[in-house]
Amino acid sequence: MKIRKLQLKNGYKRFHDLTIDLGDEPKRIVALVGPNGCGKSSVLDGMLFHHNAHGLIGNKGHKDFEYHSMNRTPNFDYQNVIIELDQGQYSAVRQEKLKHGKEKTIFSFRSPYRYNSNLKVKQSRATNDIPERVNENETPPSII
Image (cartoon, rainbow, N blue to C red; front, side, top):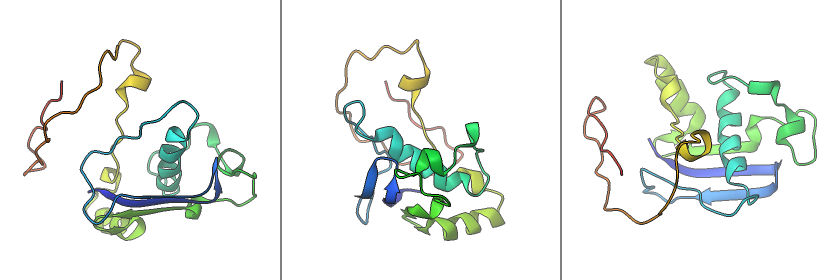
């Protein structure tokens, strides 16, 4: 499943109205790159805020509108984050996955750099295309 479009609306954190549109055929891996303080983490927080509204991951620290709303607007909620996936709107995809007990498989976030103090980044470069997995039980390719 791939994210097609993400919108952070009505003053979500630092953004008045941000739309990230990855087109009709989004790629399998998306990287957010930019200097400190430009909003990379806020984009991911928005996705988790929307996802957490359904009680899937939890709300560490019980973050509410004071944390998520730029203007600390009371009742500011997950509906200020709109997520469109290649299979449809987030809520419709979640309902379909819920029928099969797979509602926790909508997102996969990986950020080893931030959470692994042993990782030392020495180089960043383009790689060859990463092949799509044919079977969900297949082991994903390694990236070095």
